[in-house]
Length: 25
Image (cartoon, rainbow, N blue to C red; front, side, top):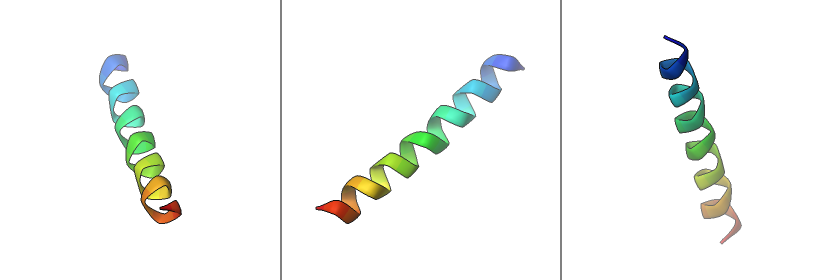
């Protein structure tokens, strides 16, 4: 349960970072 929560959070954070990088380029 906890692992899934962390994994979901990391995926969401990864998408957010990727979006910012794409917008910056």
